[in-house]
Image (cartoon, rainbow, N blue to C red; front, side, top):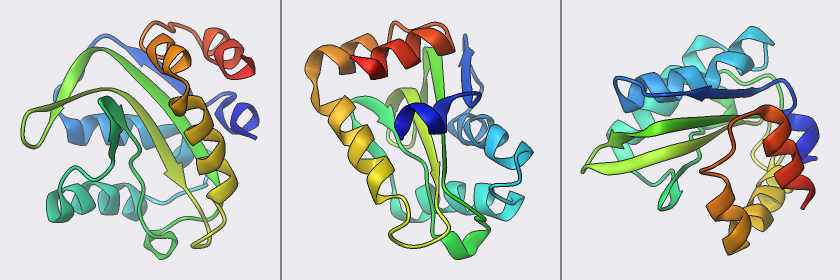
Length: 143
């Protein structure tokens, strides 16, 4: 499921000005496909402002998301890799963002489980920081 969700929803950039812009860029494919509304993107940013960096799952890996009622119309995930980490509040660096949307409180659990499996493998986790193309990411997921 992870591979299907990420196809056509990956982005690789050198650097970005702020963590807010990183979340916006990560959400762009979801916006373009009508999976989320702009209100969903703004709610993800507000969540970090209100609740801190709870979206940082592992060192340098974040999973921006918010509640479905904030403007989600479906399940989706994007991948954004930054060559130069962006600093989140508290000077926490992030290089990889998996931006997630769901249309129900539990609709994305299979997606999170697949992502958790990928991130729990130390070798695969380290390789995330080296992928430079969508195909390289999809190949990594196949591992």
